[in-house]
Amino acid sequence: MSAINMSDVAFKDFKQLLEDNKVENNTVRINLAGMG
Image (cartoon, rainbow, N blue to C red):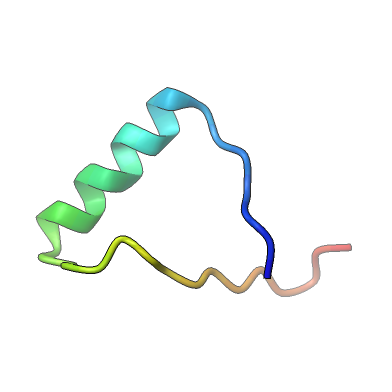
């Protein structure tokens, strides 16, 4: 599994989404179907 690149703004928005949904672990798996 590899890391992704994202802008600071996107990272802050994503972190806020995790906090708003009470996700305690900062390690998440994102599956993008059909990419590549």
